[in-house]
Length: 108
Image (cartoon, rainbow, N blue to C red):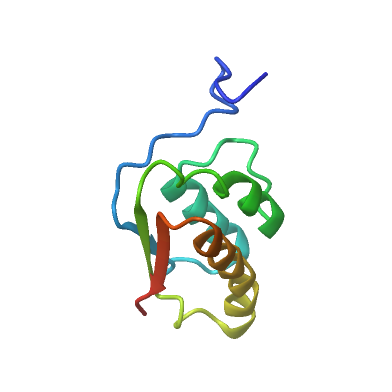
């Protein structure tokens, strides 16, 4: 099975939204944060819901197209959830550093 698996398990869904809006207002646990990432970035079914898996899925996603991500309601997350989500934002920092076509900002 490869990236274009006919079952759809390994296939990325096209992301046409720009900017990509990540809204964490309804997130009460880290799993819900990962669901937002998975849906908005069109991540495949095998996405492992951890920082390493996020890196693996996103590191080449933005080479051909300029994308901006806007993050809403990060600052209103509970402290422990905010700390756990910060690890995912570090991945976005790394992607932005390596890929000139990608940037993100925390709006609220």
